[in-house]
Length: 544
Image 1: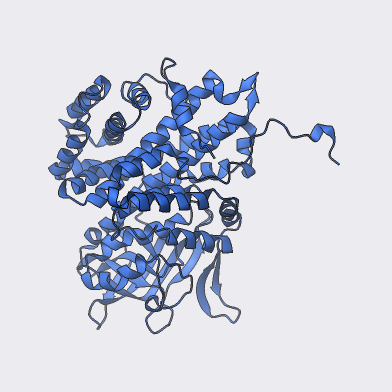
Image 2: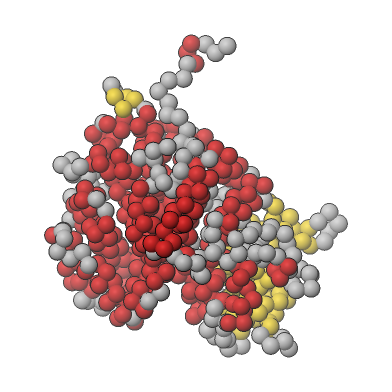
């Protein structure tokens, strides 16, 4: 029998058995705003079902187990045959199966598919972020494959399937397939034009033999991969199947798995190609053009993933402080803690609102929306992913020592939080891509200015931010050294415009005061005390 000193009091219950989607007011409002009325009820029902699954004790335990039992590489079988397989804990496969069946790879041809998928991706990230990586790669491979109609006709139905089949066999024999990606090489990193992997044409039309090394290959257990290699005509995109049509294994030598800071459940590998069969995607020398659609889609997923991590961190912090008592009252009611929570909630809301707006632009597909994505995606990827890590750390601190213990789940969020700012091009790459769009694509800037201009006149601080931004944009000579600052301001102004138009007045007021006019400090919890901060915290509460 436990002694009286072991009586447990003043501890928050686990945040479990709740609808992760419906509890997120900001996400629900965004879906209602962007989804066509004809599919809104269906979409909300699907997302609520996924939210209940994500909030269940069983599925949350799967996320824990997948991270506590990371993948293991088996290069050879017991007899010495090279097999290059990656073994995963059963929880990984369960999570992946749930995600695929929820449509995380099936956006491109469904009505409102990108908004529905974006909301689902944001929800599912909160369970376990690692399994979202292969689903992101699979989703993003579709626009790259569409540069080659024959390949798209063959592979797109497999990629957009809502059936997960883990078996390693020819993709044509499976009800669904997953894609990975291999662009980075150790001598080049983000400078993919420095790739040295060589592609030698074979007698079969469009077929090549690859020789080279990929420093980072995402999701090496996938059915096929998009890779870049140097063909006779220059850097070219290729499709590399894991298993060939006759059932034999392609030459895909997994040298080792990366031992990563976070994202522990997911496998990232170094791989060797040595006479590896590949199919050309698009024209020789047009590799970057072929794969750029995939890069853009995965960058948006980085924004969505960070928004999901932020939301879960805020939900845990608000939940904990709503139960925890200190100094004569609930922590959530203490003025200084309320300031911290409101600031975190504001950052999370701005990230979610922006991410869903960009997903809606994909669904629209119009010329103006495509132009907006060209500048808004790299800017958002730069800023939102960078805000994730400090937010996760601050949210963990709201739990005190409890938040430093693995059982709380907060350390996993903290370890995961820097990931999206590194993947698919780190901060400088994104900022330089914003500059490239500004200099080369006037339509992108026009689309951006039209978007933020929709809120002009509604808030004087937003108007001032737009005016100052226009001043900065008037001089793009020698701007590279301040490209990060420009990407930040572009994102904040866009977020401010969206919140002024769509968020409750207290949210928009707080954002414009703290993010646009500078009435806040450099850490979370330094908002002006005169604002209605209680409403922001209440809005962020994950009510079970």
